[in-house]
Length: 162
Image 1: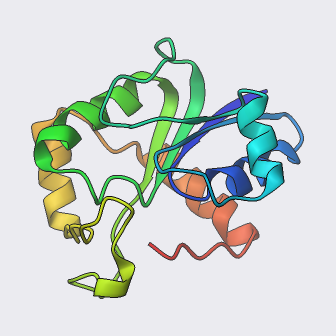
Image 2 (image 1 turned 135 degrees about the vertical axis):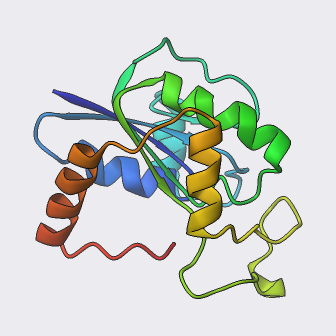
Image 3 (image 1 turned 135 degrees about the horizontal axis):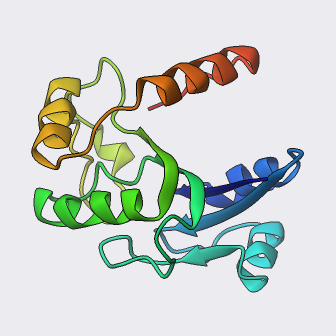
């Protein structure tokens, strides 16, 4: 059984898809307001499968609660001050790995139309910035996990938008 936590916008749709996978238990944290979402998402929130929570604060999970934590489009809006607290917190609840989708390849600035619900554009940090950040945070890349993720995504033709 794999326990997966998804953090980011569209958590309900990601969790719904993961729940259909065999041997997968999925949970989610939606860092934004969900007032204009579908009823199925409100149902996941009502069951406690998806939480609406500010990721700048500690997560309400025990250490290593999930085999995998996937974060998409949620870290780019955090200042370095909060990123220094949030990223170790996400790593704390993951036992096997943490996958981060951040930024948009080839884009240096977010368009005004792409302002988040925080009211400011994303910080489009470069891959070299992330590498330095991981080194300074004592977080290491797991090459085995990266290869497994690349194999899994190539089978499903997954192309991240971030």
